[in-house]
Amino acid sequence: MGGKWKPLIIYHLMTGRKRTSELRRLIPDITQKVLTTQLRGLEKDEIVQRKVYSEVPPKVEYELTNYGWGLKPALDHLCYWGEEHLEKVHGDKFKVLEELDYPED
Image 1 (spheres, rainbow, N blue to C red):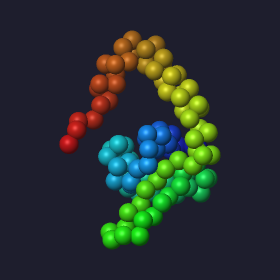
Image 2 (image 1 turned 180 degrees about the horizontal axis):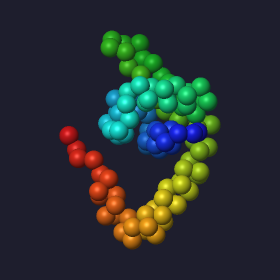
Image 3 (image 1 turned 30 degrees about the horizontal axis):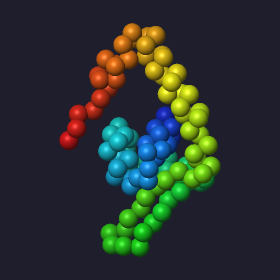
Image 4 (image 1 turned 90 degrees about the vertical axis):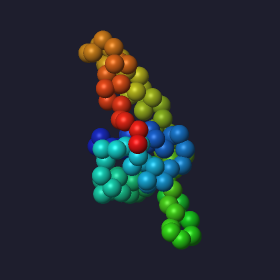
């Protein structure tokens, strides 16, 4: 579970099955190579499962396994802590989050 990207990938998969391109849009600072490496690691650890559809062009989706869903309480606690941290350090978490918000295409 190390690294800065895996928790973010898992967080986005908690809202449902995603294609690689969807994850890239949701996490714009991640490179394709890093995303692929992180997804493979999560798949190897049985946190994420990859589903390949036999169509042209190939369609691949990722979703959390039951084992992966076990991380939800821990990630929820990290999110709560992060919100409290923003309030403590910056006073207004909403202002900080707006500054981090990415423009829509």
